[in-house]
Image 1 (tube, rainbow, N blue to C red):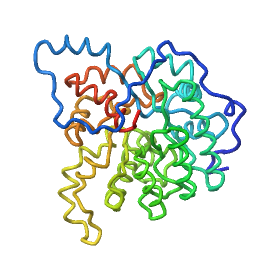
Image 2 (tube, rainbow, N blue to C red; image 1 turned 45 degrees about the vertical axis):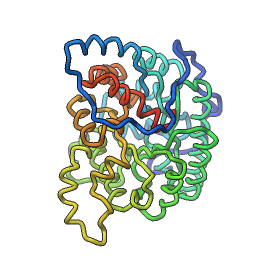
Image 3 (cartoon, rainbow, N blue to C red; image 1 turned 45 degrees about the horizontal axis):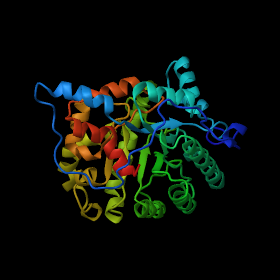
Image 4 (spheres, rainbow, N blue to C red; image 1 turned 60 degrees about the vertical axis):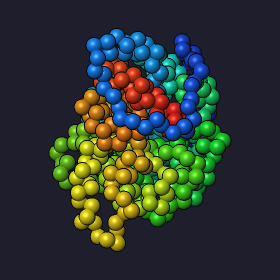
Amino acid sequence: MVGGLVAGSPAPAAEAVPGRGVSTKDRGARGTGHKQPTPGPPTPHADSNSKTRRDTSEKKMRIVAVEEAFSVPGTIRQEDAIRQRMPVPEAMKQDWFRRLDDLAELRLADMDANGVDVQVLSYSTPGVEVIEDPAEAVAAAKRINDYLAKAIAVHPTRFAGFATLPLQDPKAAVMELRRAVTELGFKGVLYNDHVRGHYLDEPRFRPVWAELERLGVTLYLHPAIVPADNWHVFDGYPALVGPSWGWTATVGAHALRLIYGGVFDEFPGASVTLGHMGELLPFQTARLDSRCSQVPVEQRMQHLPSYYLRNNVYVTTSGVMSHAALLGAVHAVGVDRVLFSIDYPFESSAEAVRFLRSAPYAPADLARIAHGNAERILGL
């Protein structure tokens, strides 16, 4: 038992090769490696012919979605945690559960129906972070990563992956990170906010940041469905604890701990990726910068907070289908640092793709958000 959740050996299904479904559009991926982006601000559509040009480009525009969840049957009791922590209708939860387990028919059919070329898959919350025993966390992370690697091997042009790390044991996490990237071909890491109340600015995690920087891969900082603590302000309002506000507040604060804690001063080549329009941090940059002078001198960073948001943070659109929010995020961090995301299966692929295709940007800038930035940053 780990915090009311059960961890154990994977079910037989987890040992088989997952995702044997056949897609109607399983085709080759076009990557751009790590080429530096072309500088320049995004250009909104202005002339009367722009809609016609965009209608044509939409039919050809490649789409890569980068925060797309899956689960491994028998590894961690995700269903129990979701039922306990997310006050949504049971029918909706049941649909989530069957789609999380599926790495073939349902997922590929959804991608094909909505024009999504690639999903970058990550293990759904609650992850191994809820496991108390470090050795058990190491074993679970390896099982999850091996399972995901098999699924990607079946559909290598449709799926890529983020690794799961057993951060209860930072030394083992470094070894698993190295294996996941160099042997399994994963494109980064997804981490669920905290390891039993510990945050990644702590000195114990510096070796992990050093390896992330050395490998040149990002760490996607994702909300944790099991909170590190309980905020009195949420009492009586469970809807505030989760995706509507609480997750944004806690993950955004965690990202600020990394900035104020000097992680990016020590590892300037390291990066984090934040979903939900950067957990709203792009809209707080002016306030953060203006208050920076009040930070005690001995705790000050080398740069203003906005510098790190524009140099060490990437932003995804997951779960925030608002053109106003997209415009604000792009202006705050730059069009080359914003990536498209759906948050499948918790959000609608159809709605997310409609939001993307109708965004008020010229085709070249829209293509960066839709696929180009993901290809460059993740090395797809």
